[in-house]
Image (cartoon, rainbow, N blue to C red; front, top):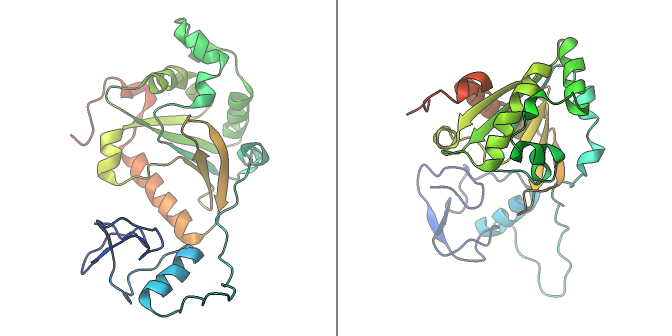
Length: 250
């Protein structure tokens, strides 16, 4: 079971928590590490303070007195403001794609060409592919793993059709069945990892549209992303071999 306070697996004793007893305002049937448990270490400052309240190591503010300021969450940055990272990285840019479709794909002209049965992989190089080719010609690497449902969604079939063009430009794109990603414990959110030191996490709305990204160089978060990358890369299947491959973990 997962602790509602620190999001880590509970391996020993636990408590059932009701709404308001944890920083996540958990439901009655949620679980958490017991009070004063050393294994429960929330990374977010707000969660840390609320955990202290649960543990009894910090007293809540009395009515009429000011509460200590709560640390804000990660800043949401427009994607356009970080696009330079795809030109400026030194060694590797690695992506995990977890969605069943992307609003930007469905709004593109390429989507209409694909619906019409055209070979979208053979379309002329666009700005993305030109940048990939320039980077890979210098010895830098663009790599990504895409999760695929069984059967694939329309959005995933579109990306499978488009992938050969990106691969020809220099990207190494691989695919992983979603059920295997779940077994492997991979994240269920999209991110880019630059040079194994900068994590860009996507914030995507219910319409599959990117509303912004957050950036982090926190060692714990970056290490977790590196571990996810290494695990996904081990089991993912190159695009050219994917359609004929069985589930690798079946």
